[in-house]
Length: 276
Length: 256
Length: 62
Image 1: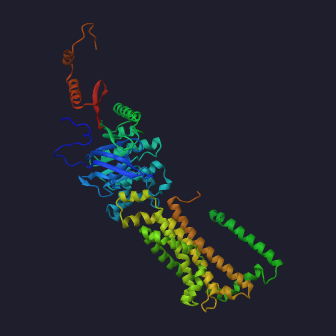
Image 2 (image 1 turned 30 degrees about the vertical axis):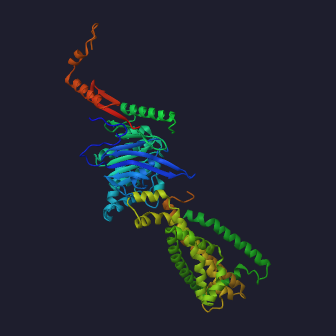
Image 3 (image 1 turned 90 degrees about the vertical axis):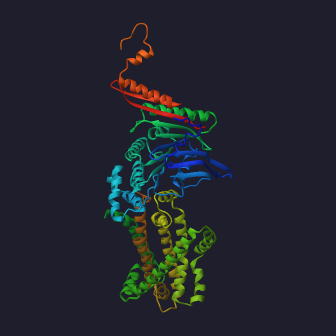
């Protein structure tokens, strides 16, 4: 295999291959702080995500990973540089890139199944098919018994599962997650991590997942590639490419090893004054 | 059944208490200043059976529903327009606030100048009194839609009009209905005041009935009672129930 | 495995003693070592046999 230049390995320059599903080219994002200064959230980030990969962006708060996710989702635009979907600039949000937010963002005026039907409606599923397909997605996340409940009647974990069903109902090519398990207790989190793993495996390479997290174990558990970032201004620090089959457990030897290596480098960054 | 009893119980006790106090006071006062509950009751029965009260009530309610409907249309359209355009909002909203603060009765003399001492003047005042609440509630309820829900809607493919219809309107509904409730109150008060003052008309509503009954004190009190009951009934049968249903669905009820 | 008291077998002798399966595993590991600059290889063993080879490759980006 050819030598890879340092700094260029978050992208893969393979001629003849189809363009990456998602790509960032020298992406910069700045914003105005309340004091009026320009703050750089994302500092010249270049990376590729190929179809079928599960990528985790890992880093402390303030490292710009959520900003990158918002740009990939089309909810935000680059200050300079490019954000590409299938080689073309990202124009805006859409059901081809469904998003799981940290708060489930369920519509409170709709029932659980109503929320899933909402997604189906906006991808053009005809009215008479919606209920059945929605129930199918709920079955996938084991929530059929709560189909007619209102969101406020569910636990946080169940709400996030509903959000997952709703996101998947769009049949998106890409699933983006903005620390979707951050607000859950340990048990619910583990359950959902396994659900997400399962769904990705079942998609058999058709779906690309990009999750943002500050939980190192979660990243090593879920991802093919973990991209470690520094705190503001956000830059890519290191990439861990993990070749281990799924389902993975948190106490797997390789997972544990990767976790400690990532911890090591994050500690190193902190001690260098890289912030945390 | 028990829940209804629990809800009606305390207010009913309050009303009964009021009646008791009233009866006691009436026993000591002259019948021309404080009529007894019994005399008011018979005046009420008289007014209903000879048709004056029902007729007046119907006329008033027709005017009220009309004013309210027009206020909703104007108020919502204006509110929606202002919610969409920031410059328009920042220039026009303060005017609407000023309108809402101004006692609606201040408009009556001007209304009489424009429309004469007519029903139209009264309805005008009711509309002017009510629509600002609808406008302001529309603007604020749109502004309070959680941005996260809008973002979620957009990532699910709802944009533009679809986002409004699917996400923003339903999310804004509780605040909007609150504004309608407030507008109703203003319309009711404005209408009553207007009717009272334009009592020289042939078209009698409850307000005009009030003005004409000044010699018949029991009838006066009876009319007041009718006015009170109508207000309470609409409030509870329509608004409270509506609000409760809307909030229960969304898990916004304050108590369990 | 019986220990020879002295001398210890050379690497070549040990390699010659291996089964085909074991040699396959070693070849794969050698492959990985050649490809990867920084990383980790994990051999998962069950019943005395290597059932899985997992690896993680690390790239410094700054």
